[in-house]
Image (cartoon, one colour):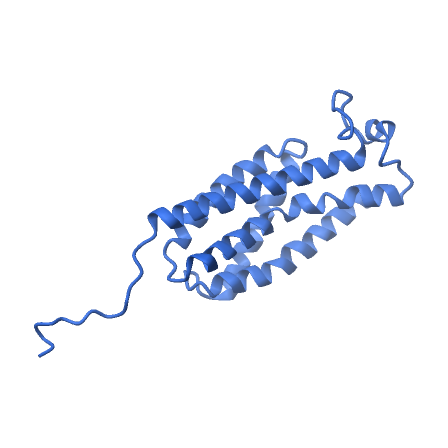
Length: 190
């Protein structure tokens, strides 16, 4: 492995395990199953692992990552529609989850930093070709910095919009009615 790959791996481990804690606590506060923060944390680590595999498999295209955004949006929407929390709290949780799933793409921005520190030219077309960016890619995406920024930004925008939008659509349109407390049977009340 080369230094940029080590940095990318370590950064993903830190982001995946570290950022799962506040997101798990946020979901636990919504009172949907699983209700224990530990199980939410384990579930989020699994989601992060799947996201890392999808990002690596479709590095330059984000096809697999965006496809997962559809899956996460559907799953999250059906799951969160059972919450008794306010819609704005559910929306905040959906947004935080969608941002959490974009972290593998965001961590890709570490590559140009490490490459630049290693003496590579991250602003030139020649550096991009040396890095492996195909010649047909237009400028500025054919530079190392432009390529990594474009891949990261498109993943963040698409995944956030799709996951949050789809989840909130399902929550708003198929949410079970909120209970108002135990009903009183008027015939037995008297």
